[in-house]
Length: 354
Figure 1: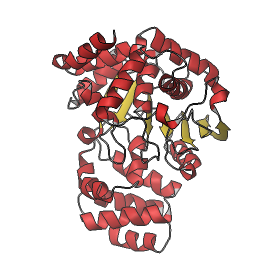
Figure 2: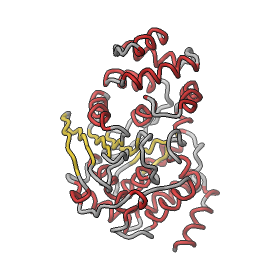
Figure 3: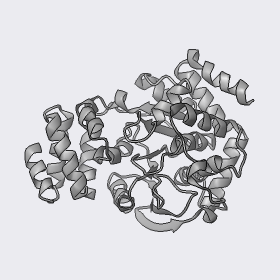
C-alpha cells in the first residue's frame, strides 16, 4: 500500500481514510523501508495533508502506543506545539503546562526531544533533573497524585522507531510533527495545540473534533510562533461543544504588553531550562515578557480545562498559579516523584535564585 500511496501523493492526489490508515500501519509495523517513509513524508508535505489523512494517521498510531489510563476528576489536558516554527523561543508550552497544573487542572504533558527546534520539552525537563524513563504506572500515579505527569514519547510509542531515522534526516516539518500532539497515550479530553503554519489552524481543529475531544484551541502566532504570541497577532480555532470558531487576538486582548523576539528567545536546553525555572519559581514578575507569554498560553489551557470562560480571567488564574508557588511546586514534586535522587539541579537553582 505504501508504494501506491507515495505515487498518489506525488501526483497531488489525496488519500482516502482507508489508504492513509493502512499506509501508517505499514510504517508503524516496520514494513516500509526508510526510503519509502522519507518519500511518503515529503510527498505529503508538498501536497498538503488533509483532515481525513491526519485523522487516519492518528488513529492508526494510537493503536500502536502503550496506553495510559489515569483516573482524574474533570478534564485531563495537554499543552504542546508541533514545532517547526520560525522563531526559536524557550519552551513556552512546557512552562504553561505546570502553570495549568498549578491552577488545579490535571495535565498529561506529552513530549519528546528536539527534532526541528533548539530543544524539546524532554531536553529541558531532563536538564532540570526529571527522569524521562519511568514506567507507565508511575506516570499514571503522577497525574493522579500530583496533578501533572510527563509522558516521554519514545517510551510510549515504540513503533515510532521505524520513522525516527528518516524523520531526523529530512530535518523539516513533516506530518509526524502534526501527529505528535494528537497521539497522547493518556487520551486527554481537552488540548491546546500550537501549529507552525497558518493553514493548519482550522485543519487541526477539525481533526480534533473528529477524534472526539471535548474542547480544544489550535493556535498560530502570525509572526511565526507555534504559540499564542505576545509579539503580534494570533489566529485561534476554538473547538467547543462541537462548534469551531476562528478568530484573531492581539496581546492587548489579554491586557498584556507587546514584546519583541529577543525577549522570548531560548538558545538551548540549559538556557531554556533556567528560564522555565525562573518563571515558575516567581523570579520574573508579572509584566516580564517571558512570564507574560507563558501566562497567556496557560490561560488557553485553563479555559479548555473548564476553569475560565475568557482569556482575561484565564490570565489572572495563571498569574495566581505562579505567584502562589503552586506552579513551581508541581515541577519540584514531579521531579522528586519520578526519581528523588535527581533533585540536586532544582536545589542548586533554588539557591541561585532564592
